[in-house]
Structures are given as structure tokens and as C-alpha cells.
Length: 433
Image: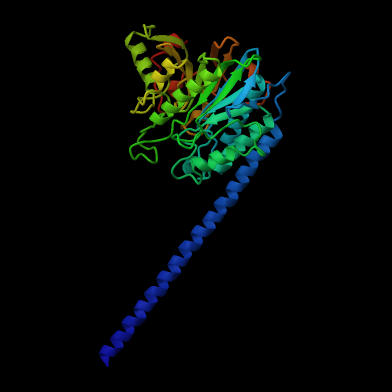
């Protein structure tokens, strides 16, 4: 009898524990559902605020005569002009697109729109990291809504633009992959001014393509190559070990084959070209190290043009791999390469005859405290001449010519970039200033 009673009690106890576990599990699931719903609502409100900012503060660029590209027989967008062709490079915008980044996002959108309206370029090229869907900074994993927000702003400006992908545009934890974001940019009904192309499916990455500039006689005066420099390598899926990727071997072959085809199209003359991508090539570090060792003086290989290095210990955050894209540039008429990635670097040097340039960044969000500083923020203007030559200059955002466009935040322009968390004094400080 006692044994039977004990079994009954044990059975009841087990049932009670099971019921208690069910209740706890229910409340955990319920709480997570409520929290998710709240985050969705708050992020929707945040996105709505960003869209309202664009709607109320961004207007169309006023061109005297805007160049309109055509699709050529080779499938590439082509601008035709006998005059200078102006490109504005924008890089590392880092729009969070979530509830935690509304203010910083609006400042980033404001900066981009102000500079584009003042510069009135024929083409805007964005060299990666349009978005920054990192949850602790942005409050969201949704990289598509912030990418779409930027694209909508560019359409409202009415400027022709294109881009190459950066490492943050499609993180491993982001909702949308490169394929998904690539498809979004290809929507011509929504974004008719976006000249992005996904590139050959047989080549690594998304966004390996060319935009050509021709004169009225049909000669290519400049080819503008976009590359996907990818994200991370060696199992560093979240990018926390800073193991960055680069332009792959099959992309180098695609580039050389494309130059060969363009040369045939150009009557046997290899067109001069410029390259745009996100992660700097290893040769940028080689050039910088050589310049340092020479006591900050020009060498046989390195010619200082402008700018400085403001990043921390890994001053040039490039890949440990190198599949030869720089050597291919030297051999195939590419005069210069433009990139971003390191937000505090805006150095421009000529190395072995090829100009290597860090674009001025936009970032208000990714680097801690960077929204308070301004020496590193701006754009890079590139002027391509009818003879195929080019000039480029870095433009700081906080100069007078951008002031009348949009109201700006107050930043510290007195302190050097080393004062930003994680940065050190530039070895090029004396030369640059």
C-alpha cells in the first residue's frame, strides 16, 4: 500500500514538474515574441523617421546639362562626352537602419546628399559599406531596409550612381545575402539611376562590371572597373578576427579578358581605366611601409600625393592574400584604384605608376565616438579628362562650399584623427599638414 502511494506521489510530482516546465517555456516564448514584436514596431518607426528625413530634406540635384548613359552593345553602361567627366567617390556610409541609429543615420544621409548636391557629379561611385546592420549599434539585422533607404535617397537626388560591395553590406548574420541585395539594386523600376550590374555568374562575387566613358567619335576615354573585394577569410565568418578577403584570381582573369575585349572594341588601343572596390590591396601597405622607411620622403616607387593614415596598429587593413590584381593593373592600363574600408585613412600615393587612394569616409556609427569628429569625413572627387588622364582630390565635409546645402552637426575639427578611439597619430602628420 505504502509503495503504491509513493508511486502515485512520484507520478504526480513528475506531472507537476512537467506542467511547471510548460508554463516557464510558454512565458519564455511569449516574452520573446512580445520583445520581437516591440523591436519590429520600433524599428519600423525608426525607418519611417529616416524616410521622412529623406523626404523632407533631400531634393533633386540641379544640373545645367546632365549626362545620360546608354547601354552599349557590349552590355555596359556608357557615358558619351568630349568634356571632363566628374566622379564623386563616397565610401563607408554605414547606415544602421534600426532603432538605435536613427540620429546617426540621418546625419550620414545629410552628409551624402549635401556633398552630391554641391559637387553635381556625372557619376557617384560608392565603394562599399553602404549599411551597418550590426545589432548592438543599429538595433536590427535587416540590411535590406537600410540599403533601400540609401537607394531611395539617391533616386530623389536624381544622380547616376553605382557601387561595389563592402564587408558590412551582407554580414553572415544579416537577413539578406549578397544575391538578395544585388537583386534589389537591379530593380530598374525603383532605381532607374542605379547603374549597378551583378556581373558574370561565373566570376567570384557580385558586382564585377564596367562603366565606360566615350567621346563623340566612339573612342573609350576611360573604363571604370568595379570589383567585389568580398568580406572575410579563413573561417572568420563574423569578421571579429579582421581576416579580410581581396579580389580573387578569377576576377583578375575576368579583368584582363575584359580589357582585351575593350581594346579590340577601341580599335586596338587599350583604354585607360580606374578601379573601384572596398578593401585596400596589399600594395597600399607596401607603399606606406616603404614611405615610412624612407623617412616620409618619396622613393623610386612611392610618390606622396595627399592625406594621412589615422588608423590604429593595423594601419592598412588589407588581406593576407594577394592574387595579383595590382600587377594586372600595371600591365593593362589602369591608372588608379580607389577604395575605403579604413575610415580614418585618407592617404593618396602613387605606387609603381598606379595611384592608390583611400576615399574620405562618411561613418557616424561604426567607430566608437566617430560622430563627434570630422577631419576624416568627406568625399573624393575624380576628374577624368578627354585625353584619358585624371586628377583626384579629397574633400572634407565641413568646408564652406557644403555649408549652405544642409544644416550640419557640430564636430571637433581641432583635434587630430588620433583622438578617435582606437586611432594613433599619423606618421604622415607633418607631411600631410
